[in-house]
Image (cartoon, rainbow, N blue to C red; front, side, top):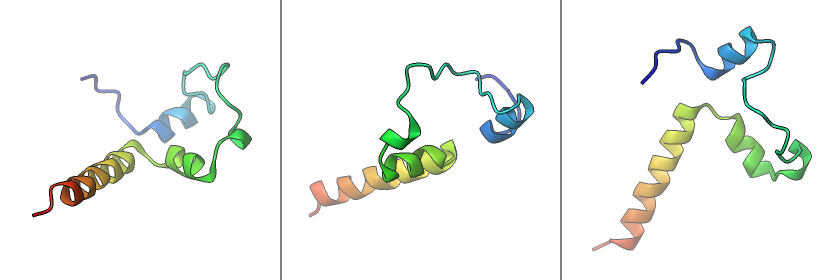
Length: 65
């Protein structure tokens, strides 16, 4: 794992808003749903937490005793 230091937001701020990704082929923000826009605004840590909670909830429902 590389030690980049700082969050994605601070990295984008230090590079003038550019995060180094090529969004030329990406959909415009207006074409995305409200859920997708909200998901993309979350930090990766919160995304990981939410995804983990969903996986645990699905596991609890599917494998309930």
